[in-house]
View (cartoon, rainbow, N blue to C red):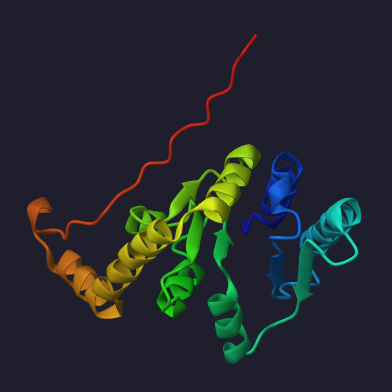
Length: 209
């Protein structure tokens, strides 16, 4: 459900269509080992590593490797360092109840110069839609376009978007969520329920013959 193969294919599509990304963007894919004894997870790991090998084999140059693949757990300080170093966060799960990684990235981005690309199928998309670039993770070209849009985005827009994201996360913190759940639990009328932001993903449009 994390959409890693689709994410890698989108990055490959971006490298193919936008040559000025070459030597300018390095994609760091961190995969935390999980359920390694389950065959489907093992097969997924093999597919991810195959794609990483193919993309690096196709685009690597003497002084640039497009993808750095990390298969291990990270200490908290390591993770924070990666968050702060990343100019773009590509978080594109195929389905996710919330996705706290997107919020962690924004919370750590004190310089307000990062760009969040987020799957519209993540629960956090409703809250973060005003500042993030929302994408359909199944649409490879759309994600590739978002990567290039984030790469070429000027500083003023990056900072404006990230400021919105950080403001939303600061306002809708854990205490706000607890209060909302409690108010919803004791509400007797529909009008008493807390109003939440919503986002409805748009269907993919394909041309038929």
